[in-house]
Amino acid sequence: MLANVNLINCVLIVVGMGVCYLFVLIPILIYYAIQHMRSPRLILLPEADWDEYYENKCRLESDWAESNQFNQVGIYRLQQNFILVWEHLESATFFQVTLSPYGRFHSFTTVFSDDYSLITANDRESLVFPSPPKQFVQSFGIEALDLLVEKHQLTLVDLIKVKHLELPEQVPDFEETYLNQIRQQHEHVRSVPLYPIRGIWWYHIGRRVKFNQPIDLQQAVLEHL
Image (cartoon, rainbow, N blue to C red):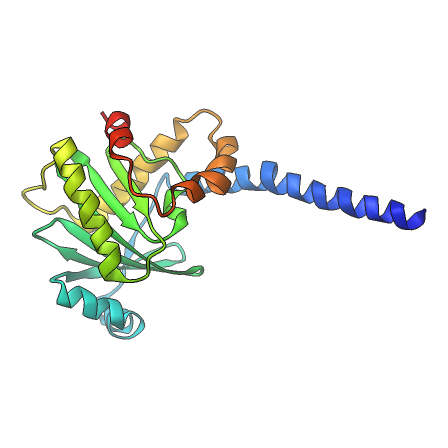
């Protein structure tokens, strides 16, 4: 009898912890994540420190970038993350390597006129929040840079065709572009009613459903009119 009571108590504790995680901890984490987006700050590392990252920690990415005509922009720090950036001027595209406590992630960002952009990444976290108007985001579990950039370019061609987008005459500053995207994300999520609660779905289901899926062009066009 006592053993059954102890088993029931253990089950109740586990269930209670699960409920707290889903309905208390996740909304709190979502809320504070959005609050940190209100005033984001990128810190550009001194050029004297660049070699440690470009030539040592991310040598493979540096070699790939150089062979694909991407030029070094700089290395930035955002909270606990270090972001290495290259740019390809002709295609108005930034290549980024993010070194975080949770791993190494790659992404390509193409900017268009009128504040439109396409982001192709290889981490689920980039899909947690709903994309603001004019931002198109897709992510794939692809480590090979050639395959990831191919995914980006395929969507890029289709997006230009259906949205009649144009590349800017001059590629904007990376820091300005990156911070502006974070602020737009912050404003868009804040506009969603009960966003901390809805974040439970975004975090556990939404990002997994969208992962490894290209942008639905028809839906994307309708949502971003």
